[in-house]
Image 1 (spheres, helix red, strand yellow):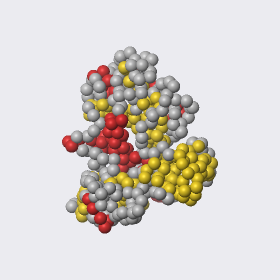
Image 2 (cartoon, helix red, strand yellow):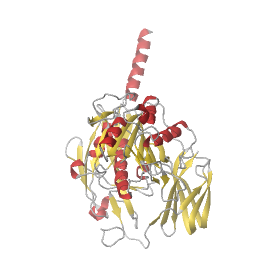
Image 3 (tube, helix red, strand yellow):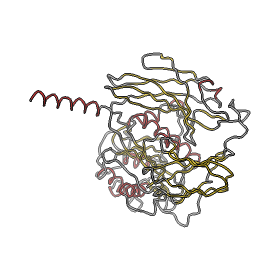
Image 4 (cartoon, one colour):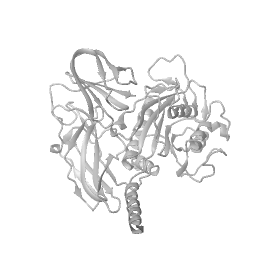
Length: 482
């Protein structure tokens, strides 16, 4: 009996070790400053850096989940009757690979980080607040996962007013070296056990010290830090603070975003694959070489590679032949040829490469994925019919991406909603995709600009609504199913 009991305990421990060897995701909130000093050009550079970090976090550990939140004082491209600290939730926590590119500017004017954290806290707690101005008003954290807040900002410590000011610290209690100045940061660090990473285009020494005080232990920064005696990280030698003069990356910093991501990620025994590909011109005739390497957990067995080209607007994946040359047991390269691609005739748009690796570990299959580690572009491949830009397969009509031409009401929805287009479509097709790019609903229509949809049978979450007209016009928008 004792031997049987011992065998059962040993079997449980071995099963647990096998299971726990590849677990341990983190919930990350990526917070983007939309304030007055964040020009559109600067926002574009910041957005690219945020996308690269998000991609690398999902590549580091497939169980990591990402939420993206904007903060500012006014709603972007809208006449505002008043200005006050606001947030816009771009998307809730997800490890869906389709959402990485789904970021656009939502707010403007002032930036008040302490107050924005308070609103993010409301969203995490399910507390209604009119200053959460997105259709998504809650953030559904997994309490079993650790949480880290990654902030991209160019903020001052405390400058200006509530409408157009720039504040890293508490607007109402900004005194130097006081816990009150960091009220909501302390709430996150203590009550929510959150960690902070600050990516800061710093305007001056005071702002640097304040942002470094917000940052949690880690990284390599050991410069000036504003005193906060209530901070759980008070007195630590290094902070997860990344000081920038600009968000663009220099040639000497090609691995900057990937290094940042892996410094704040728990890989937890997962295999990992990484690659680089430098976009060159456009069209498949100008495709370049993919080179990379991979790491497997001890005892794991490599199975296969899979490469796809994903449309950054529609999320459609197109398989790409990938038969790399191995330069060592774990390093590889492959020179892409036009014949490797499977695009239908007339395909145009921007695409990113996703390279996945399948392996087996203790009899179970696993799959890890990677995006291009090259930091300078938000796409890897550009197909166009323009005569001065490479070669693409031609068709009588080209795809036209229509911005702001589609509205959804109500949003969020319990299931039934209307898709409202800015004009009647002679003939088209409506599709709804989940965050992994799977089509969960499809409906043809003719001569309509208002289309009734019902997705009661789908589970809660964020979905992408896509309308494609007979003239190849494409409209897209997100919807939240409650």
